Length: 427
Image 1 (cartoon, rainbow, N blue to C red):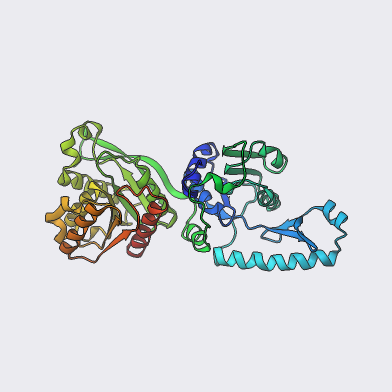
Image 2 (cartoon, rainbow, N blue to C red; image 1 turned 30 degrees about the vertical axis):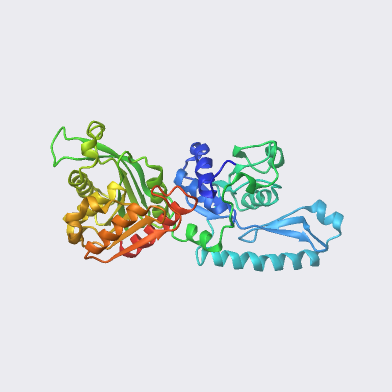
């Protein structure tokens, strides 16, 4: 077993594809299972995400035998040898194609709504699926993508049987795979969670996405009140095109801006059209003193100064602001929100320690969402007590089966969904 779930597979695959980061790249997921994998790849490459809809044209009396495939924009790829050997007439072909085009159009409407397919002309198309078994769909997808005008086709999958690249020779220009085991029975054997991807999950990955971020860069944030020589910390700022707000992340003790859990939630917010700023609350020297790590007023001050810096930065000035705090960072987020009045539009706490901001909780005005793991009883009790002290709009949500770190399959994804919904409605 190599992957926890498709999200994990996507992240592992994305780590192999960093060299593909280019302005002309577009990532195409194969519905349905390939889409959550492709979403992680698109995030890593800073590329737009779309789907590649393909329908096989099966021989009428032997549907499993493909005589061709169709894609959007009227694209059709035929296997003339099969058509001739099977004795397929023009009428036979037209009947099958009409039927499959009806299904193709219905799925396009279901997944994209009114959004048009990505223009692939002259671009690098990264075709992604959750695995490669027979390869029939992936091969058809590459052929359709080529017919749609892609200049370069990259086929990328988390897992495939040894020797799989020979099957796609001449169809894909480049191939990438994380694992190529000798013993290969089915794609699902390499996933702990290989549950069926739903139509709703595909839509959620596609519809909110605004495309390539306007800003996706490492930044330096001043921590002082101004003047030369003031301390700075590192951060990563991502602002999708058309973003309606920016969420600042306050990490927990012992963590940093590189927290994989916060990065995962941030990626979900980015797909929902929200900007994110992940940054260090302390310098390296300051973080070495454990007293600073639990100094909620100090951490809250740093969060407010980062908010001031963001408000004065071209491209983010004028955008609404939200706070996402994890563990002890949630206390800093609540404390900073209490001191910022209506400058902060919403707060989300993941497995938070609101008790560390107890004296300031009644002063929080921003709508606050408290997310706690159902298998984290001590923190759940602390959040229930904090809920009684909040005077603002608030909600406490438990994620069944989740521990304090939300490491269980699907639990962190649920946090991202809840946070995205909360922020999107208020930013």
